[in-house]
Length: 95
Ligand SMILES: [Fe+2]
Image (cartoon, rainbow, N blue to C red; front, top):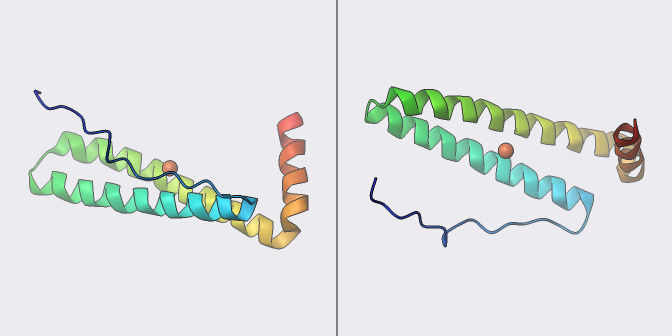
């Protein structure tokens, strides 16, 4: 491969000031990743590149797991409130 990677066109990183903002930004990024990998898998099918389809499908499943994780965090924050959510996170990190 003679190409040069283009790293100047990376997506902006949005972090957020509050936990809810962080979770929302992460959710948007994970959903964007799922869309991007689905598009890449579609293209790999079109050019009959089965190796790329297999690899991209594995990565897609990981990204779908990240979307699930974000939804769980969002539900926990809604149900227990941010303060209790953070206390719960701290407790699980300490043990
Ligand atoms: Fe992810």
